Figure 1 (cartoon, rainbow, N blue to C red):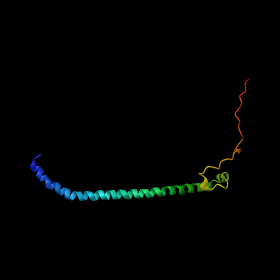
Figure 2 (cartoon, rainbow, N blue to C red; figure 1 turned 180 degrees about the horizontal axis):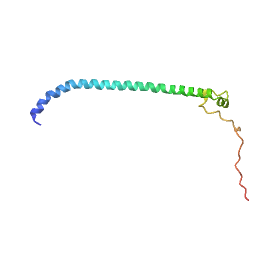
Figure 3 (tube, rainbow, N blue to C red; figure 1 turned 90 degrees about the vertical axis):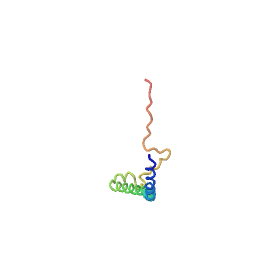
Length: 109
């Protein structure tokens, strides 16, 4: 490039830099402030999502038990709707829910 063209571009670049950098700095500052607010809102939503999900599950369980009296009879009076997700109590040693099935014995014939 010609040195005269470079010399004539110096004031143009200086004016653009003088007025452009503050605008750019404010833009970047506002952009990251917006991103910080979005992350804060996302964190708040994640905190309350677990509790809301648990409430929905309990509501569905109570509706199912209200609609199905056979299910309530099978569960017995001790099991409440919030206890459906818990495993049943373990059987004591020696107690078995059904008849004991022994494996068939093969005989030689």
